[in-house]
Image (cartoon, rainbow, N blue to C red; front, top):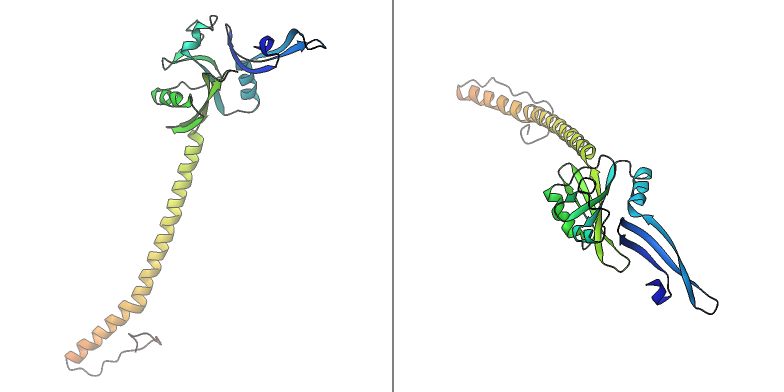
Length: 219
């Protein structure tokens, strides 16, 4: 492509040994005649490993190749080293201790062929985005697994703490309500009922002691 167009090309390329990030630029004579080319190449798995080691301490990275591309990657045919995932993808790279993907994750991978996607699954989050070659064709996926267990434990602690605080507030409110009801409603009503009983029995000497209230009951 570089020799034909005379322009530099860079991007992802599939080869016999895997997926590489490659840049090729033409070398031209002063009169513009192509003399050759110069290129820079690095394995994508090596770059992911460097990123995972330096920046992603808690996350796990995987590089998946569409299974139909195995016709090109002839050096990656060993199923022990490069297992097939969900019958559609070949696992080219995973960071240490990366979790395996389940059936629910496999459905997400199919959707991620078109665009980046993220979902929460049980105790882990999973994000994936398509890998496209320098021509724009989708050839694989980069997957990032997030361990959500610590976040879920923290959310549970916050939930129970909020529930405990709310329960305490409700208990205090109930206690205050009971005190107010007894002090300003039940006790005066009981006193009035006692006076009414005395009057009904013909005893007019009973007195109703007022305690300085200014509500309807005391009036």
